[in-house]
Image (cartoon, rainbow, N blue to C red):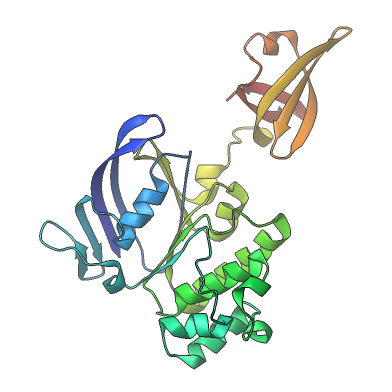
Length: 284
């Protein structure tokens, strides 16, 4: 069990705020942290890692990582950290990057096999693709068999196909080593696929906490689907109003009623859902 009870004053994107987190995480959980930029997600990871200080306590199993009298430095916290950038040693091969952390050739070979890097182990980082570099970063984080694996949007710079591949490998490593994993992500599909628990932060506080299905799905009642998007334009064609909405990387056109458009403004977030197979658009 991991007990996190911390407090820290921050200067966020919208001014000063307080990061106030009270959280229990079971051994072997895969916890995803979501929320808008500036809500405190990365700071929370850094506090768990010991890279930043905060008031309060962090206890992992029977070990106190921090409290009023104790503060363990990062190297004593049995963590692995995967950042957005890869931070690999450019003059070392893939295998040497791993062995620099821990001289355990068997573990290194196992990690390289799981992530399909075994045939590339003598290559230098500059010869690798972004996805391959992130695989090396992930393997390196696992070389100490950490109690907690921390990941800060590790796949955000990758294309969709590579993201899917890395998601599968992250899940494989998580299960193979029974590691407690905590990952920051803005991608709902990624969170749903990988995590068994989700928390959503807003202005430094947990505003939602639960199973991915309960936290992420926005349908209710007889709705068949529900997506959030941005309303770009409303045009009138004869007696019909057409709303153009950006959902992810795609634009969709949806017929809306005159009653619906009274509550809609260009540029705001909207929810697109169906009821009895008819699309419904409403303010988010």
